[in-house]
Length: 315
Length: 325
Image (cartoon, rainbow over all chains, first blue to last red; front, side, top):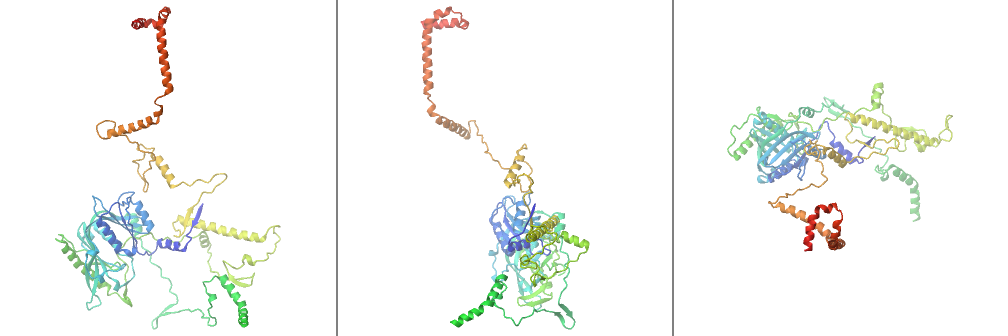
């Protein structure tokens, strides 16, 4: 036997609908978590990444012994977390003798592991260690720019992969309309060598240039660090094909009540309901009141006013 | 400017020509150089971004971005279209058109306009005071109860159909996100008792039992993803080295002594069994007396044919001799 289970509360239904697959997706959420062991540097790195993605990230603070995405069977727990928090990007920090200050960046598709890039963190400098005008500090949730420098991002497979993951991790929601006044940060990635990438965040200063295009000045605001590429795993071909599908071009809905005219331009038609000038809205006719109760009250009032008047007279 | 790859949808610029043949000598140099390069790239993005047609709002100019050119994977698969119900399929086959009904309808019972469905609807049960009898009515049957019964049946049937349609939708994976089809207990026929639901722990135990049939007790079995190592219910036996030499050997001694002491102390009050001691004493006394008697008897007993004593005769004799001495 089957039973149809539907949420009893509207709030829960809304929450479930938010998590349902969408034709046009809103931004991916990021899960930041620790592995078996983390170092001080990694703790700081994870905190900084969380701060950069504050608007759309969840940070776990406990150690996770059984999260080992590169090993078979080690991804179960991670996939569960992804399902639980509805995150499809994750940043995992682990620290071991073999791979010190290890950062695993990865993505999931349909709450299953999609791809992984493992990088080591070196020369980490936190945001606090940079001195700059605090007015320049990027706002939370602002749309970032990206600048990738170096042919390594094209020729070396690992770096090419890392570039894609970094772009996916930090780009936020895909927007159609952008406020030009809101541009305030850029992520700078430089491929120094085939295995090393210099990563930093800069604030953008828009200076007057006399034309419509302002002159750009960059101020390093951090965090800055070097990524040393270690292991990586590319997505499965079949899954990749599935994941790369885009929403079919939406057929335009017929625009009603709008007409175009060469002379008049865009003309819209508006329908306004009858104003009912004769009747005055009474407190008892408020829509929020239950209909039965409202009607009962109306009926009572129809009878009672006469009585009340009499009372006043007697007084 | 043409040498840069610019993806305006993602606000990304990429310089694929720049390469560091020899890594910069110092870190400051590297940072300086990349900032310089970065400024150029961002300027290139700005050059294309700020010339886009914009609309002014109080917060600033707003431009419309083109779609991103760098393709990134989706988060979740594309939503599946809603699965047609059985009726929809049938209607399509027969070419039945769907047309809208008015929300309100004229109610002949009360002579007013009323809602078609829901509370206080058209042809509501409470508005039907009289149901005319028909020729084929069964006597003794309540027509009002029958009406209610029929309504209930229709509702149940609709619920059944809905479940069927949802099941079909679930098969094609197009179940609405807020609906779950949960399996309840299997239908019970006859005198069968309801099957007990097997819990997670129980399943794990069974899996553990099955694993213990292998030579390694399931230790080296290939685990499924998410499977935990089997539980070991009993205590692990520890064997301490019995040989002297290392420090551990004394532990073994201590352990056995401990056990022994325990046993002894438990039965300490029974170490001297008075009854037994008394009987033993009695027996020895008896023996003594007998042997003394036997000395006087022995001469006469010698005459008696005794096979056993035959062999031991010389010994006995000698002992007797000694004793007599």
